[in-house]
Image (cartoon, rainbow, N blue to C red; front, side, top):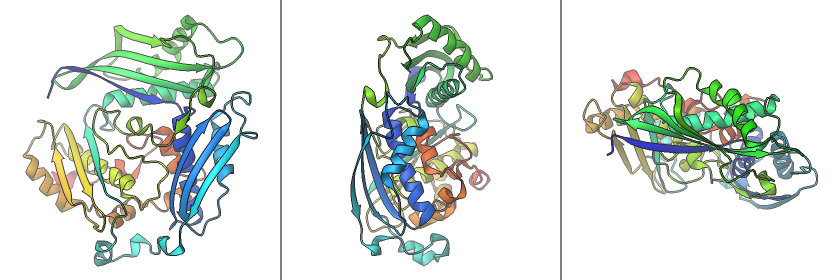
Length: 395
């Protein structure tokens, strides 16, 4: 493995069409689970100029106004009506109602150990969890910084400090590594969607970006931009239009930005739009939980946990641990401790993280926030799979 390298990761603001589709899909999951926590729901979305398409299949006692959920999500990101009119846009749905017997009939918290063994997965997938000691949240630094720049842009727009920004911006941060440790910020790239009759020129955007975004988010970071850090603002020129007016979006196309920014592997399966019975979603959370606790325990500086599931089984058919040469003890021993202290069965994961009841715990739901802010790491708050409460057990 290389010890000296440059790595870049990207992120996007909440109004990016792909982010919108993820958020709409997860807002539907929230609405179904708020009314009926034992719902089965799979939702996917596509968006383009003046049009939203939602495909969903579900088994539930809930009654959800799907077009209204889509409209409310888009309205919430703040597009001007001339750019995307949520009242007049066309919302097309393709809905499949599954038989009642496919609705989840039990609360995982009430299952015995033998019953959890019989609670098998509905799909096959290999998922990955990763953690490293680049940041306090044990996430790779490039994707963490790219997400922070994106969030800072949204905040600067909503607070009126950069009012000319569109809800649709993308970011990229390049970090130079030496001996696999981040040592400097190589570059920061912002593709800024602009709105209004007279958008500012690039020099003004650069000045605002420096003062309102970069200086704020890097203020207390140990790795700082320096005089050689390159700042790219709309390197191909100003975009006259942004958002769904200029490019389409689809659920699942920002999975890398929601996880590890391609610094580490993920399953490539969309996380958004799936209820907790989908192992390709919740298994990703369980694998991250395991990897983070291994790093928090000081057993490795970097760790990847791989879980492979197949139909008809409750447990993974394979578990692998890799520390990329950073392990403090043998990987086989780490894996033995992992398997002794973590339960990767589907029913146990749902119960451990309370995944059916989180949407009802807050007024604005739960899963839609993950789609907007990131499925892992600090995200919008303390996530159940971000705890390091088993680090002592692993030591």
